[in-house]
Length: 388
Ligand code: HMG
Image 1 (cartoon, rainbow, N blue to C red):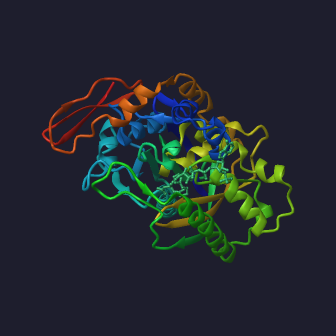
Image 2 (image 1 turned 180 degrees about the horizontal axis):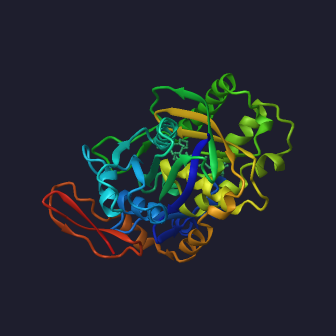
Image 3 (image 1 turned 180 degrees about the vertical axis):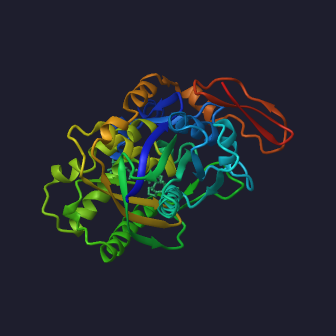
């Protein structure tokens, strides 16, 4: 019996901000962002959107197919938590009308926690193969205005159904891990934006890749050339390109630059126009690969490198299943991205500064999102979510 990802769907906000506009305002060359960072657009959440509404939107097509009673556990990965105690997943549980016997919990370790959730989901299914586990990763990436991180903001959520004998990608049990207590990126409870030592974070990312890969090689018989494609954590596209060049070099893979690039190019399409979605980003990258790769991926191996600042990293492998292409949400994703609305700089600032009430005051929230779920109000310290 194999275990892995049976279905995958993602969601991002209707609004986006083009980095060309940011470059114009900053009097910077657009190519610094389009090429140097490898990003074109960033998703900007509407005032009535947050990790809960994005998560419910991402998971809806999966739950509609299998039925609300089919999900035995909901694992919610995020670093944009909305409550110190209550899991964001509990709100999603109600919005999606999941069964009262469904287990729900939230996980955190920067961008890595979706991978912890996926591995836990696989372990649960391996123990009870009739179970279906819903893994959701949802985040809004925010840095200070006029900081180097600003161009790497974004938002998105991804939902994955983990089952026995999955229809998309079998996740193999061997993993390589690396953990180290470092301050490369963090967000204390009193801040809405992350603090980051940008250049240092890219160095730690590369170091963790090498370490996790070495550990993976001890656990698995797979070598670099056994993989057709690689999915990396995507804080920005250029980071994955650099990381992959690094890994190819470490392994003396004997590939030319174009061959190395071809192994990751199709993972970058969606992230390039959404921006960093932290926990969700590598899995939106996987969706991009499955939905955009011109050749059939059945039987091919994917290497995954998941990185979460702070830091925890993991390298693992998956095998694409025969017939996977029949079970994708390619059309729906393409329509969602096509239907987005561009915002100008003034609206970008408004969205960026939209109050995130921390003083306990009551707030009605204007109806803006085009998604199926929205945050309608915060009253008596309670967040009120509704289906639209
Ligand atoms: P910066 O320092 O402003 O950028 O921000 P730069 O000056 O290094 O330029 C970037 C690249 O653009 C360079 O290329 C330039 O040469 C090039 P490189 O040398 O790197 O190959 N460039 C141009 N290219 C073409 N035309 C031009 C041009 N001008 C310059 N005209 C930095 C970069 C990464 C520091 C910033 O974006 C940042 O702080 N980002 C946030 C932190 C981050 O994303 N770190 C990634 C690793 S940590 C991680 O992945 C975890 C994370 O997702 C959080 C979590 O785990 O929860 C962040």
